[in-house]
Length: 173
Image (cartoon, rainbow, N blue to C red; front, side, top):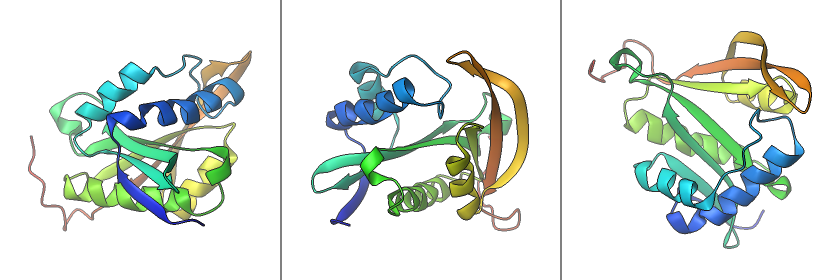
């Protein structure tokens, strides 16, 4: 593996992020959406992420990204976030996803995140296995929640508790 750098995403990374994401939107069932990402909206998302949007860069090229955002609205959910991770085809199976997630978990802990949630397409068993290897537990399956390419797809919910209840120092908001 060429020197891998995990860093905070910058607005100038939006084109590469869109290329990775849009290839998955067009060519797979790993995401339920059929709406491709735009560079402008991705730049805006990065600007408002406050360090919670990371990229993996290899030899000067963005090969993956991971981010988290609120899980649900309301103050009772402030310490629970849903994350997303996507890699370019050439980056898969090489430890880049693990490196991204380890860094994202560090960022999350520093920001008083207690739980990270993953919503994974049932058409993505590799994504389920990846999260299980990282310590995420399957906590639910929502049958036929998504529809894409004429198929009903289940949503597999997985979560990882980042801090035990006794170690958590975050304030209720």
